[in-house]
Image 1 (cartoon, helix red, strand yellow):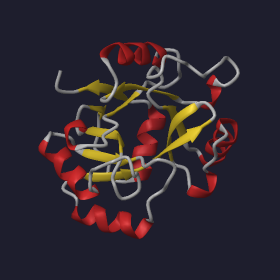
Image 2 (tube, one colour):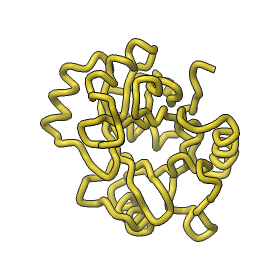
Image 3 (tube, rainbow, N blue to C red):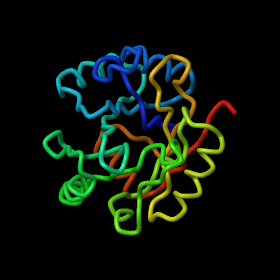
Length: 196
């Protein structure tokens, strides 16, 4: 199952031009089985998310991309009350909830903010980002090898052209956010760049 674990919609990410249903439809057309909405610093309203899931042609999961003192972090399994700009506070909340944090596009700006003291905050990194260069993705994949869990992949889609450039391949079907979180904890997945 191919899941794009890093997507933005115009509903809650002002930098995106994609309607959420449009995103799901494009993903289906491009061979992606599910998308994960990771809006910037904002959780989806549960009722709106349920309505979108009923209409979408692919599975729709929910995470968030948080802006922290260590850069952007993809969080899975957190409630909006747990969001923080402090990576250490975010890591503590993730630990309490059984959530996972992945450093997003870790090689994008050439400044790795993770140190020996802060690396423990993250389960791993985004090893394949559809909006990053080949060299940035090679560096991110190399960084992922130093973590307990493999790196994840996502398109970081903000526009039609970006949908489906990268994803995470899971060995079994996933239906709910709980399924996704369990599969991420299990580490039985692989980050993939698509369309190369």
